[in-house]
Image (cartoon, protein in one colour):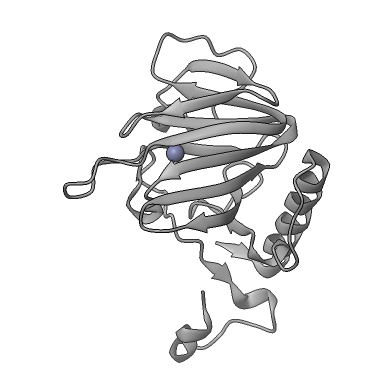
Length: 196
Ligand code: ZN
């Protein structure tokens, strides 16, 4: 759960990094940046800011902004019915990104978020700088973390089914819940429709 203030602040910081990357935002896109805390309620440690540029039933293109040291939890994109899992290319535009895939332990630059050893199983580190890109095949587990200055990356992919991604951490919830209590007190039970 995140507060409106946390969301606004994360959007503002993400937009700042996107501008720094040289990518030009269109009017109204700052407000479209999704702030995801993965249901873990510690956005600055585990989370991501995602601007969807296009999403159809066949392709997806996004800008992923990782704030300094922020980690996107380990997950894979499984097969859905007869369609193979999402295939994804991540290309770093700005900053540094530590990317983890299956392989021997080469972790030096990044770190597993405190207390999360059991749910970050991959330790094969690829340090990505602007111009570097990586291709994740369907169903291949991965996670990543920004360096100390943050990172801005493109994500190009086949069909997106974000809510069906499989996270190693059973506590992860892909849909971000907003805490409305900071905006004039908790809403009564019967006004849930205002939440989202
Ligand atoms: Zn992924």
